[in-house]
Length: 111
Length: 116
Image (spheres, each protein chain N blue to C red):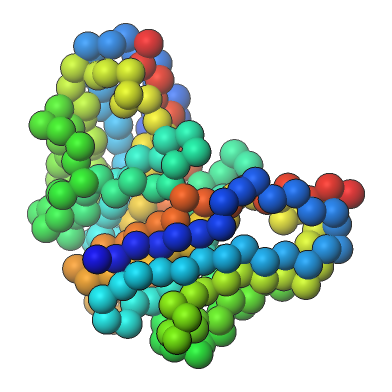
């Protein structure tokens, strides 16, 4: 079947720290992979995506590389800001236009 | 409209009552999804519409839950005889299809349902 497992939270970091949020997946075929972000009081929005192996998605200083050999799509940012405080969801697009989401990882960045 | 619009944003109801939640998609988005987000849980898939038909309704948790979509646009999720375990945020997401499909889901801000 298809599923996404992501790092448990919550995560608390100081401003300018390095961020990694782990995400691994199980899928049939070669799914597209996504990171969505949910800022406080807002709906989920796409942060970045990758559609095939070795693709790197990037946006707002965040990056994630589609690793087929380790079935992973870890989210990284070199220097987090207070404004990055949000909940981050890893997701994959499976067959039948179905999307599978992880449980979300809450990030708090303190000044 | 500019984005996916959901109403009501908040709904408090008594156990046993029926509730209707509405989703207005982005114009032209033919794919529409309903998810449920419970505290500390991920997004639980409920149902997927392509146009007015629902090729995948496998996530509806019980026969108390139903959804419809009319005119390929507005969708309504109905929960009958609500139970306390139905308390959650119900999210609607839409997607372009065909050659303009980027795979991106566009989410509304959700309808928070509290069943007392």
